[in-house]
Amino acid sequence: MHVLLEGMAAGETRSGLRMRHVPDHVIDTSPRSSVLGAEQSNTSLVYGDSYICKLFRRLIPGVNPELEIITALAARNAPHIAQPYGWIEADLDGTATTLAIMQEYLTPANDGWDLALASVRDLYASMPEVPAGEAGGDFAAEALRLGMATARVHHELAAAFPTDVVEIHEIKRMAEGFRRRLGRAVGEVPELREHVSVIEDAYHQVELLTTEVPVQRVHGDFHLGQVMRTPTDWVILDFEGEPGQPLAERRALYSPLRDVAGMLRSFDYAARHLLAGHSEAEKLEPRAQEWADRNRAAFLDGYAEGGGVITPADAALLRAFELSKAVYEVVYEARNRPTWLPIPLAAFRPRTT
Image 1 (spheres, rainbow, N blue to C red):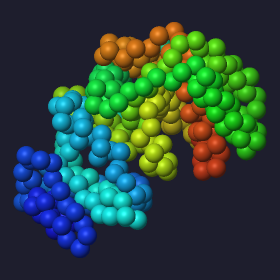
Image 2: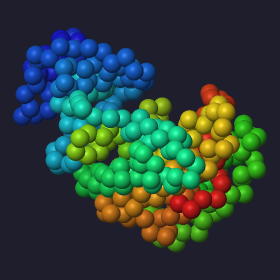
Image 3: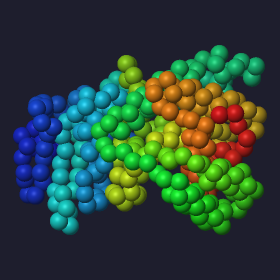
Image 4: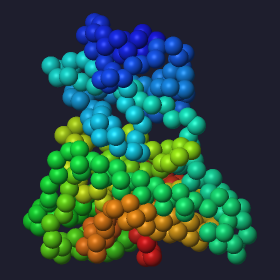
């Protein structure tokens, strides 16, 4: 592990491995190294309190979108990101391919998912008559700040990379894609069938849009587990997109509302995660809905306050993105965690936000 750190610091090439550092940055090679033991899809090496180096276990030929994005944002002095310091690459099938990325190690910092769950636990432990806003550990102020940080990062992404618009006929094709995925999901998960009319109506509203939709580079896999709360603000991590998707798809331009929808779904998951297998799940369900509604609204308020735009037309697209994500979640939970199936199914109920 120390050889990799020294290699990046010196900009060495060894046995086909090109170890590089961000220009004009001097890497300190004195910290001791260790391996994070958390369950992850990649392997993370930690060097003291300074650096964290993520080694990709599944290699896809090409530059990893995360390296591309964080170096571009760092060059703009963009806030809300962990600073990049180095990377390792090699040729795979004749293509320069990212093997590892080293960034600033955020310490002290707290994982967004853990903070949200702590807030939900506090709410469930409070008396039923205590509103979510008055229970200990209320998360709404943090959700507001997270919305602001998300809007700022979207603004920086739009400035750092090309943007475009999706024309009306392409929007209709997008809705058709949503509908095809819904059809496959219903065939696999019968519990989804009773909600088809609600989902179809949301997709139809997208087909009625009469304005072009701005698209840009986005995070692509945005949820509470991808953000960290430092003593000063929120930091957004893991810009590589959905790891299972081809690089071209992860680099494609999307509406930033896709990220917003992902975070809204994450609030729903945080609210109901603790109800899976809970003896009083039915009794606590209204509390879960209250927590989710409160923090969803706060996040959207923060997104608007941070400069993010959600017009009435955008609201229709946001709803479709969110329900499409929930349809994907229904299939995932049915295959892997059947006891969690009620979490995404709750997305199809009427709600206020």
